Image (cartoon, rainbow, N blue to C red; front, side, top):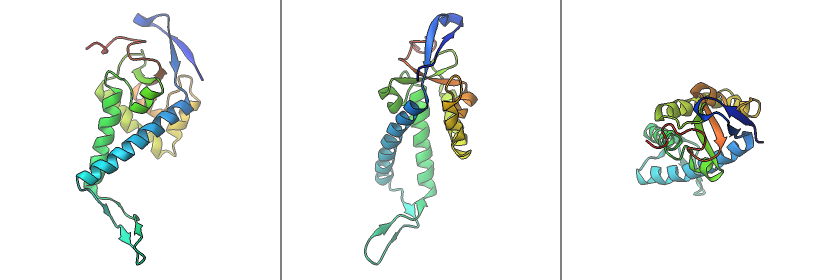
Length: 171
């Protein structure tokens, strides 16, 4: 659903279209598949393994364990690099968001810094811990913000980088 809003300041008269819940879910699913495949490949290449895995007497593998601590740290760093790195880049979006025509901005429509994107990333962990309510909020808030967006003062918009604000785009 398109939710236009007119912003003030140097961008007076420019209409922003907030990205709603379902398109953001679709973008996240694309990102999750891409990041999941990349993680498995890189974890295998670098030799990280699962602990507690077993092979039954019939020869079937059962991954009942969990990733070892070094593997967990590796996937955390990979997630930060992917989400915070891409959302603060000139793309202003992850691959999933870019494919669906979305971008992450500050409240004025400008590109966000890596530190703000990092705060948004860790805010997503909080959004998940409270039974995903932080994500569900997107469907019910005026600016289509989740808890992580509110904490980091960010918006997810339909558009292209530089369309709403130019601060940081041409640096």
